[in-house]
Image (tube, rainbow, N blue to C red; front, side):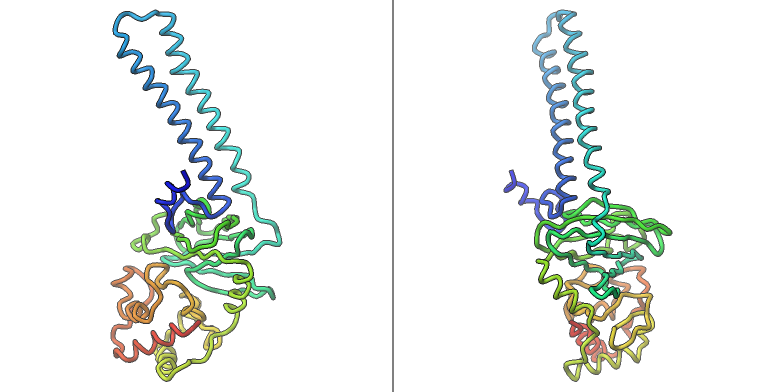
Length: 316
């Protein structure tokens, strides 16, 4: 059975769970499927019985069959299903232990601001990518800065709405190493379908090293092209919206780009992270993601665009 389900495996699969909450939800799904199957099977049997016995039926036997199979049996099955659907709820809604990893997620049209609480108590800001340690409970604190969004990592947990003016909590424990996909599951505007994120589950030791690296400021440009890209980035006012620790912590409207080169994707999970796609994103922003607030810089010379892309990709 597991082998069959692996045919449906993928970054957004709910049939091959990689988290304790997702496993609980999958178990509930199979209970619901089983209950629906038994009710369906009983009614099909009653139907065939009526078809193959066209002559007058025994009234008492027919009454027992209808009342027992059409009323009592469905009620019993539905009560059992109700029990198995309610009992997992306390576990799904239970917060993670106090010493657990805390991750703040702020949803905006159409991207995700991610904040980790570092070892020294300092916040470490990222965007559109979440990395978590294997078999360690995690507490998500979720909020929205504009409209209603919905945070959903299908392979790890159920989805939960994020409502402006309220902070929502979600806890989970990853159980498998891998790269999974997350989405906004509530229509939030023109680029709703382009609001994704990558979720990477890592061994705890690797996660600790990664988080320490993310806390460090950006490294100086490693080449002449990258250095020119940095100068162009600053000259064109990009720091008005973006922060790059070690370069400038001025912009708060857009994603933090301190280590953008180390991320798996750009544009909130819609493009692979390469120099080519960075170039395309800067020069064709609104064609790639309609309605996004970032201005398009297609007026810049080709060499300047390329140098900015080189510098950004070097921010590891």
